[in-house]
Image 1 (cartoon, rainbow, N blue to C red):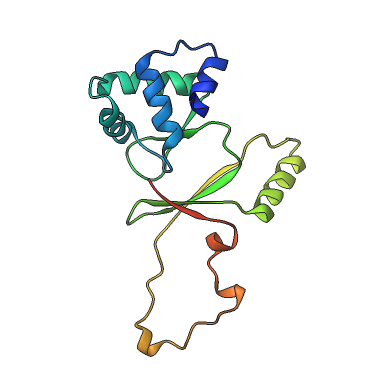
Image 2 (image 1 turned 180 degrees about the vertical axis):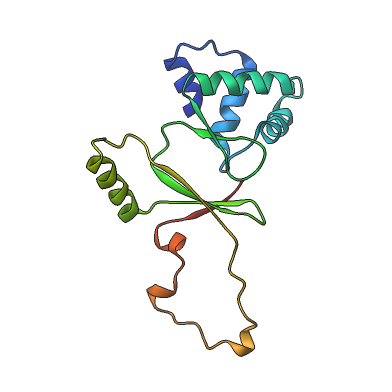
Amino acid sequence: MESRIERQCVANGLKMTHPRRVIAQVLSDVTDHPDVDELHRLVHQIDPRISLATVYRTVRLFEQSGILERRNLGSRRARYEPSGDRDHFHLVDRETGMVIEFDEPETEALMRRLAARHGYELISLKIELFGRRIKSEPTASKPPASKSPASKSPASKSGGRPRHA
């Protein structure tokens, strides 16, 4: 069965060699934002004959073809996600590298209004936020947590999904 990324490759007129199919499948299946070394490790589990150089060339080709987008999520290595993914935000934990993807409709609407105010139509919206988890005090000195919806984190209110970068 063709993966989503493989279908995009075919639609862009790319020749689908065996290594490209494997790489496209892995990229379609991952739930995080792999760098090339992580991607090679996953690809190597499927076919150990696919070299790191082949993965680098293929990722570069997919990026140049508009199939993948390079993301800088706070590490020295570029990470990748499929292009055309819905508008969303990344919240990156600077200590662990964990990435939480979430939607925030009110912020998206504000960004669209700001673009329009400056004479632009917003085509894509990608925002990366970087932070550290707030350290909580020991539970003995803290009053019981409220069960109200206001006590939920912003990511959980808007459907945030933790993903490791």
